[in-house]
Length: 546
Ligand code: F6P
Image (tube, rainbow, N blue to C red; front, side, top):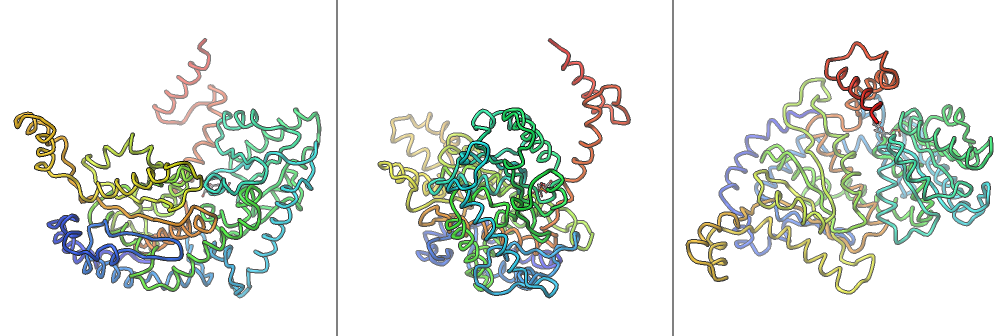
């Protein structure tokens, strides 16, 4: 991967930006009645509308040329073919194989990985069915609750998707514990019956400090609650590290494996999805995989001009590198996507938050934007003020379903209207003259209106994309997630970085390991900077305080 293409294209792209900064989107929409059809893509039951960006046909052509010269399709084909594109970890990147429902083989080092994938999926489905229909019995029979213990990719995907697909949730109650803060486990213990709970320890490495400590504490709690020495029946494991799962005492028949070519943040499609599968059933889980597979086919076959993830990537680069917008908001008008932004934060920021390129040199451009978001309409009454009138421009992705998951009077019409209103307002804005006229029309004096009008101005011209889909169902969710995954991939290629490693999390982990003894015992606090030592001393003092 190389970022020389972005460098090479940047003066042309900046010229387009300079030209477009003199035209408002309001004018562009006024002048071209076909703007929506020109700048939107339809696939299956989903529309991706990107017409509310500061673009036109020539600038889009220039962006597509950038994708071509960066070799996005070449890297894409190498990824799907199992090449070791994760060079810094010497691994292939094949989460796409996990949802390859085509029946076609996928080769890694000459070996077809599909039979192993299908074997695990089959074992997961058999186990999920047993848990769901009460045939997997523990201390007091039927499982009523499952608790997924994991963090990062071993938590965010299943937790987000289980909430998103709750209308299809007909299995045992599902809980998710991730934080090493004992409050997370303690609050969960209050909601579950020990005798009928299954803990699913989800960890690719099975060494992650938070997960291992939570799993150990869950085991201790169970033993105490059930007055039993062996609570192994109450545990299942999802991991690539069978040695460690055995050492923890989890039977191989309740251990579901995956492979080192599945990155943590891309692992919802693997055994890590077991809690989701138990919640919604293997059939619906399969539809979720099918949706992602459809998105993979789209990514592989559509020309860049109609390729949703490539367009998402290019618009992101346009906003980040050419217009200089540092953050990106994701705003689902879908309450059950309330963990969607958190999920995407790991996907996007752990993948593309890199300042060194594949060639070991410092990145020649800015890379991953800061991603954040909350569901609308709640966000409207909190931070949208800044999105509309703040000094920073924040490109937004809006997501909304045509059909609600719940039928409740006119709630969904209100939700959709709010969603469309926000992107319209961001695009169209309100001039000072318009603001002043409105104030005068409402009965204000000319003088008062003149003084207040500047506060009521909306600059407009604020970019957004909108995903409109038929309904938030398993297939749609699978598609959406895969589109975002491929967007992140295409951006990584253009920036010349490796989107599949995460060395940036290591230093903090190592230092936490050093600090644990010092936090436990003040006498051991040494060889640290003055701030850390000062905080340690104050911590030990405050702990003693009444
Ligand atoms: O620390 C970051 C990370 O490695 C993520 O990439 C991963 O999703 C998470 O920790 C959890 O890792 P594991 O599944 O090995 O416990």
